[in-house]
Image (cartoon, rainbow, N blue to C red; front, side, top):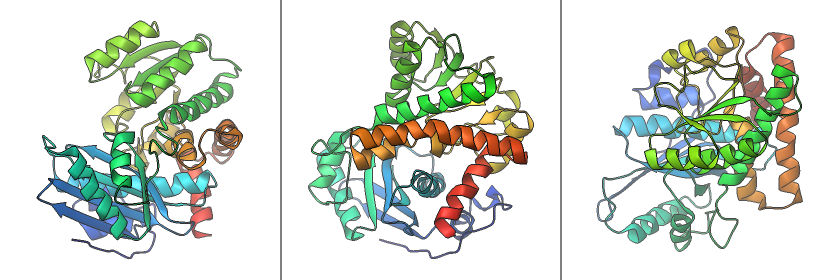
Amino acid sequence: MSSNISVLPSSEDQSNQYQNDIFQLAEYHGLDALHFKSDPKTGLRAIIAIHSTTLGPALGGTRSRIYESTQQAIADVVCLARGMSYKAAFAGLPYGGGKAVLLQPETISDRDAYFQSYGKFIDSLGGQFITAVDVGTSVKDMDLISTQSAHVLSTSAGHGDPSFYTALGVFRGICAAVKVKFNRDNITGIRVSIQGVGKVGFHLASLLHEQGAKLRLSDIDPIALEHCTTKFDAIPVSENEILSLESDIFSPCALGGVLDESAVSKVNTQVICGAANNQLADDGFGDALHHRNIFYVPDYVANSGGLMHVILGDNDELHRRIANIYTAVIDIFERSETADEPAHRIANAIAEEILYG
């Protein structure tokens, strides 16, 4: 089944009070379309959100995880799709923003059939949506999708997993933040707390360790955490402690929404720069960070290296664009300081000017 919603962009002064109404949620985020697919035979329950196709076809990863409810999955995919529009626009890429979530069952009995069914769903949209890897999906899954649709990237025959390049962009963002907040051209001795050491968090920890940063790491997977702390001479920290631990940089690299009311009140850092999408549970929490003099590097600016790699592959143009993340972060900081406006609102205004004129 499929459902389309055509709406206009909404104003930023609305709040997340609309989370329980699908149409108001769509209006709040300026969503263009929302598509649903149910396939009882394979257990597939998929939602694709298309935020914008102004600059080109909507591009966004496919996230697979167990959600507490369908409403939670809808809220997640809608927010993620909007972030992808901003990410592509800010990065100067000719794509719109979209996202997909798979409401993963406890057990996928036939993964091949599951992702082939999902590939047919993507293909039914006629190229409006192009997907790639995200949390819970792999290059192998993209290969399965590609047997049913040409509208997929991050395949083994294409550019593969973008995780390292996402991490490289975040690393450039951290270096820029260190420059503007601490007036330093290196990160030796800088205390970085990383929340989540999955594929991207692992690569980020490696890059920071190579440059002499002091790392504190947390993850819900004790095996991954032990591996990273040993390899990078880091200190393991519990999920409850990582936010309040005093650090120079806090880097959220797990799932989004971590910066909620509780987190913003206790986070003990001068800079937040990470790989997770939608780190702010609400835009108002970005305002609160600004009032606390914490520089929040907008997530879709810092983590855009992965999107660039999905499109460009590993070449000189990719590395030039990732290097430009450093300049972009400094520009956002300077505009934020001059206007006394939160950094995420500065970045949003730039992206919206590109999207909407």
